[in-house]
Length: 588
Image (spheres, one colour):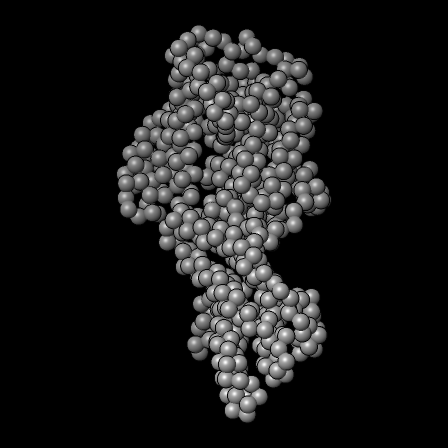
């Protein structure tokens, strides 16, 4: 909400407070209700970073599980907004695919209708302010505790207490408001009235940023006789459309995957609303039949509104669910991801900071992106091409093919392709560790170390570059052979790491395999040192050439060791279970 809109709303509210004390009570009830929702979300956020994310990962293999997760989670949290943000974050980080996310969001749409049943069946008919007071007392007491879990429970109890209190004040306000102004005088019938009240429902939900709060306002107004039954149905349809604004706003800080899910959410709710508008008479008939069957009184309009809210969402799911995959393909065609830029972060988004698992995953992916840039810089420096090194060709032949090294500006390439991304990753990790305190900070610490290893490998490459270029134009055959051997060793390691990265080398002992690579590096370095001594002793190279080669052999060893250390963290140990299992196997 921009500042101009906020000022206009505050002026209108102030005018409403001035002309009507009842309006003040209703507005206070809405505010208390919204504050309760924020407290409830805060409480459930305390339990993210493990439980909720683990369940979310486990429900992607079945359509029924996705729907049930969406329904049950939204029923518990009474907020589809928090679930939408969670799913968008997971999709943006690549932990969920679009179809799985759509199934969860469809379920959340159905789950959010349970709030209307609770308010219509319990909140309106019972003096729930009596239940609110004990919850607020116990909730605040728990919030003041040091334990994060107790604080989370406290926020949940406080949130429910404020929800109940908000409903009470809204109901009281509407009951007395009708003595001053009877809003039913402004009721509209027919198709034009339907469209006007749908638009009013959309506008109210966009302003309040909560379809649940809008539904409570509608139900309390209906219970107080301030809105007609037909108009309340139209308002509910509008609230369903307006709730997608939260998902759209949440996707603004997400990548293209998150934007696709927000678009799918909007299309689903818009389609469902269009069906409800076109078939409103049929829906009213179905609601009457359903209520007669389950024993709901024909004049209990609040429960009939809740039934309508659930019914048209069920119809929407039944129609849209078979179209989920075609819709996903359409959105992937229309919302095309721009080619990743080598000099800018591709995965670090603010939405990923919402939850620890997504923060860790995007850092890992961005580190992979940075590694690809490092590979490009190293290969350019040693005068080889990615397409050749990562092919089936013999590396010795490739090295012989490219004897002339280019005059490559590594400093400029470092500034363009490395420094910006590297700085963004370090800043993101610092923010994530601050946001989530020590939660998952161990994994972020190791990822930060992996990025430091990449930076060290670039520094080693810079030290190596000068003598490599000198050797390429040298007339000393033996010196050129040694530096060709250096280039071949580096290319060999990059090929092996690429095979691990792309999953071509699948092994239960991948950590042990990397340890064997480290041991191989030590043998290579020792052999190179011995060979240099022989070349100096036999006067095939000068002592100056030999000392330069020895220094460069150290640089080569450091480059390779740093890359292997990075690979152990980024390519293998990005799941906590594999870290523990593989380290135990390595020690054994």
